[in-house]
Image (tube, rainbow, N blue to C red; front, side, top):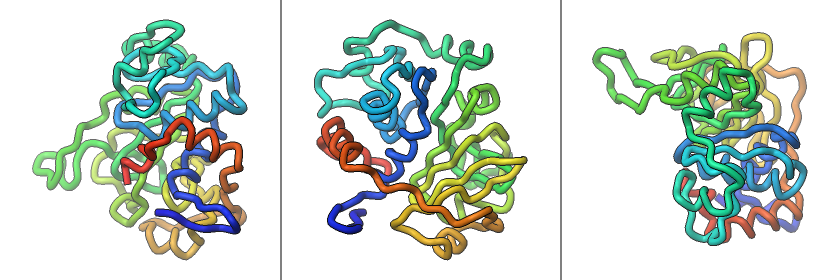
Length: 245
């Protein structure tokens, strides 16, 4: 979806990716899982701008890759070995996290509730589910053990942000949840509204969230700068960042 604000056109994906990139600090070890185009671009964007010494880790195992052909990549393909500084297998990422050395893990889920529980396992009763999903996989290990777990989700509705998740795949230790409408921050055991995207508003967030939306003040997510948009469009010329919408 394209939104015109001022003289610039913004996609919601642009706002989400730039917001995620700003959460990455220079020198941090950062990981994303499979089917993670938006976090992948967020890491690349952060490294191109304010965090050149961040260490980029991924499912295939290429450390700090520099893909030659940016028009043909996935978030878990062989391109992430191109010009890599080293090879770091996935099992070592889990070990790194459990030793307290993984600074950021970008992960996702299907349901979230106000206390930060994450469901990536089933919809409905666990023994007779309506839908059975992939399950915890890396999330069950990395969300509790990474220094900061940053969640992204391309849907924000009452089926996603529920009063109580159908199944607790993992819980706690969530730093932020980035959605097409806003960013939630996990603080003192509950989700608080951190910022609202300029393409949305408080009422839209409330209308699409089952639990009470709490906040200290109404703040808006900064729009992508011209520099951020220029680099983002260069590293993603075919607009793969919208593949999840």
